[in-house]
Length: 179
Ligand code: VGL
Ligand code: ZN
Image (tube, rainbow, N blue to C red):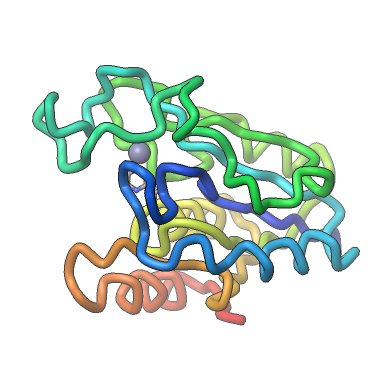
């Protein structure tokens, strides 16, 4: 069975000091690097939230979030603690103005990339548990991949207390496995 590691949105804007900081988001770097270096994965993918400056999810456009991860800005760069040498493919998401773009599969060709390499199992890690990790894991399940979420290598925004736990429960209910 060929496995892929999908590192979701481990970017400066989602870590402390960033525009949409996920509490303790930076703490997962070491675990992610250990996974990507483990030799267990035939393919390591990093997604980036990569929005146009007028993205519909931004509060100035009536959306829920502060401006974050505008394409080409420092906030949209992968976090410096991430071991870039282990990343095979970078997938940019959230580029359409009018959709949330929470899932790494939405409009990116990620499914085709995984199929081309014969991947059947996907481990999802990164930020944020309650948005992009959740939606990426659910889409991977819908596409027919076996899915594991490494719960030690994710962190949530937690707009409401318990959002991350609920997100992981949804993934589990859809057939995902927690590690
Ligand atoms: C995300 C909110 C807005 C995420 C992206 O990566 O989870 N959350 N854009
Ligand atoms: Zn976003």
